[in-house]
Length: 302
Image (cartoon, rainbow, N blue to C red; front, top):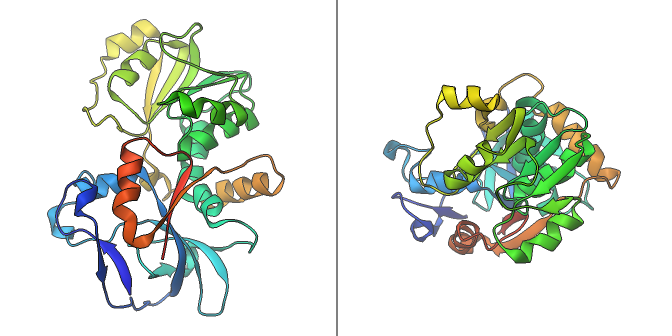
């Protein structure tokens, strides 16, 4: 079968198509024929070595797919090594999905949807009427977080984007305004996946008892040390979030996913489908993602 693999750490250039044996499902697993594999920013950290050790190489990235079971069910599944034509999944990690739901929309609800849900509910503990700033608001997580913040009762939803061309999208998704720093008004909640200078400006823009939730480092400039005395002067907090350990908590997947799918079915949440790339062209997908040329959910199709 065709898969995409890397055998050394680096940028998108280390990704290459290879032929690998079809995986064999173990006890409690099912073999899936992949319709589409989701591309996540976390995949780029696997490729550059931020998430993996050298003993894991060679490695096939990819943590989510839409695929078919041998008995014909169309499913969404959390997996390992998803950049492939076939993949195994735990039966407990498989969710049957409707035929009419697009693969990109379904995949957006898995890692990005769960991230956005937990950022607002579990980490920020958003209260009705509070203001929310979403960095990278046109991206996979951000485009969902803008909509969910509104759905969860935010008083104002403000969007930060990397390019003027993305402003119309986030306003159509329900953002009240597109912002630059310094903010005209202090924010109760800021969701930041960028880090670097943007993190510092966001921290200084928090209202009293505000929460800055950091869940990524797209700037790749290193994390800013946070002085507790600075937090005391601001009367604010910094909250870290990483999806992987969060998913291990009881109810962290099934309940939020059920809510997300219900919101989509009711037309109240609209996942944004981004680019679709051939599986063998995973390198270009990563290049576009890192260059911030994309919006919404990116997928690879065998």
